[in-house]
Image 1: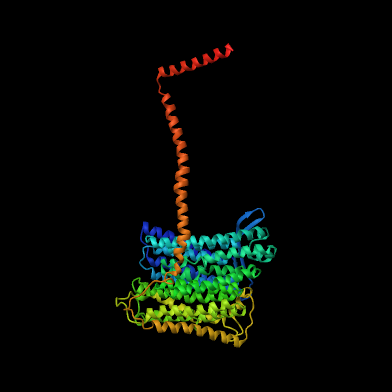
Image 2: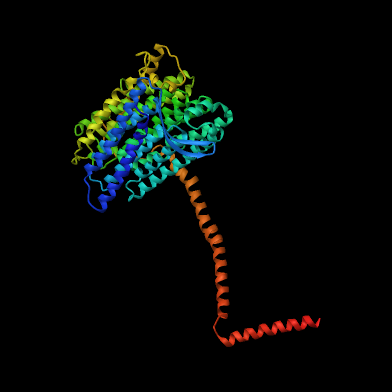
Length: 628
């Protein structure tokens, strides 16, 4: 397949986004256009990109090493040349396949979810723009071009989180996401500047960087690796830059499924894997990444245990699962982390879309303690949510079991026993809070008997497909005790990372311990919530329910201080000093001009008087001067 079509994987959704935007403007100003037209155009774009991705996948499978397409020089200054380039290797095409496949399913789901919305066309324009940005991020052949996609997905996230901008809370959530990501992106940019300074003249695509990375001093590599990871902290919502993700649930549920579960938030994991040649040289930074991931996983899981908003529970779950991914890539097990990215995309998208179906059916109710008894009323949603919950809880043979178990095994074999312990304990907590959500939502006595909103086929069909993915996608990465061929490791090759040998009996023991941890969490949730009494007063509060008051602490220590400084600069410095000085000078000149202007009265006698004074003064000067 021609490398030329790499660009079209990005261009198709990008052109679609522009066209949808124009159609939307036409629809609201000239003539109303049917929602079906918008949906058809929007859904077609990621499907076509997926088909192109399959073509490149088959090419790589049949022996091609990689595809490179560089249509033009994007930036050229003397010896510094940056090409607008696209790289289709096994890592980027791996990402393209599940981004476009799951993205297509979420587009179909969104067509039903957003039905009748006034901003229907605008929503899908933003949606396709996001897909194009994410595809540019993973297909870029250099960090500079990746950064364009990196910033673009941040912009799309802002637009989609604040989609319902008439609600001030949504605007605040969008701003919060945008600002938190800018903090992380500054770190990313600093890392790129350092890298460009040392290697830029020799070439700045990934192959050149991998070839010449050895010329960079080790202490500079530490700075670069740490700075790049700051960017990953922001984009992938890790401690301390995680605070934007729970509030991002203000956006429509398809946004949560696509951006904040299946694609954008995994960009940081992809970035670390892409720079594997850098992080292999600085294992201490990698270990720091792994510990950040472990503590993020635990911290988010603890908070999720006490939340009552169904989407926020899933948001904290996303932060926790991203923590597992960073444990893996931080320890150098890149393919293991990417394997969890792959399985997580299926079951987390399914969880969000299942939650969205519940929210729509219950007329936009999101509090799980105002649900209950939905098993018989929403049987399909019950089944797919059960599959997704079993997958995220690490119960075999569902997808999450294989990827999560491999991460824990790698942590233990790296002798990082604290990380292993945190990961295992977090697995039990995950099973607990997810089945807390499940039992409260689907079992127990109905809190309300109000009529459910019917769900369209476009919302139901993608759930079934994703349920199969959540159930069986883990089989592409079977442990050696079951198969000598791990398809994920075989495919990714260069990104497999450090090889860890484990005996078959060790694998069985670790799998057993992991499953027991998950079953314990489910059992505790069953005892407490399977027959939950909705008539009892719900007690909400406490430090965990209030998310350890981190948002309040940030508001007090940073937001208020910055606001006070801004007020001081605005009122005291700008108004009191700068404006006052400038206005005083201008007023002085104006007053002087008025006084001079009074002399210009057009009165002949007055002018004669001034002339007489002038001549007299000059005459006196001459008399005294000559007299000397």
